[in-house]
Amino acid sequence: MPAAYYDDNGNHVKLCTKCKKVQPVEEYYKHAPGATHDGLQPRCRHCTLAKYREQNARRAKKRKQKSHKLTNSQVAWIKEQKGKLSIRETAKEFSSKFFAIKINPSTVQRIFAGKIHTDAGEDNTISIYDLLEGASEYTGSVEEYLESNNDKKVKF
Image 1 (cartoon, rainbow, N blue to C red):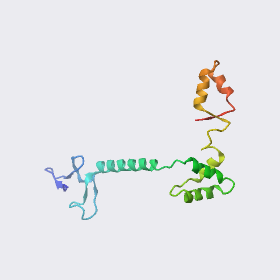
Image 2: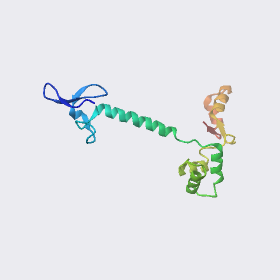
Image 3: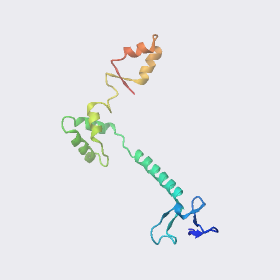
């Protein structure tokens, strides 16, 4: 690691190990005592911040990938608990029954209410693809076709 030095003009400068630019020492963060001879980080502030931004983006991507999708058996178990346990108790029991998966009480509430994880075979729902297929076979206007299906709930 290059240490800070004085250039020909008498300015206190240092070479960044990442971008290879010679910059004033004000452009460097301090390092832990005894880690370097000059007490400054080897990378300039701009390169250090870029490194942290990249690491944070990578970590955020991993966090998003860790979200668990509920299986049909898990959703069935939650629906069985309706009326037996409260929403919070159901969420707490879920985390102990299905090891290492936590669920938010609001998710349990939406499953109880039938807003998410509804059965595909429900009588009052229609798939968006079926709706579009029926519209292509319909001879009238699309607006009239949609109005004729207004009592059905469209499931995306």
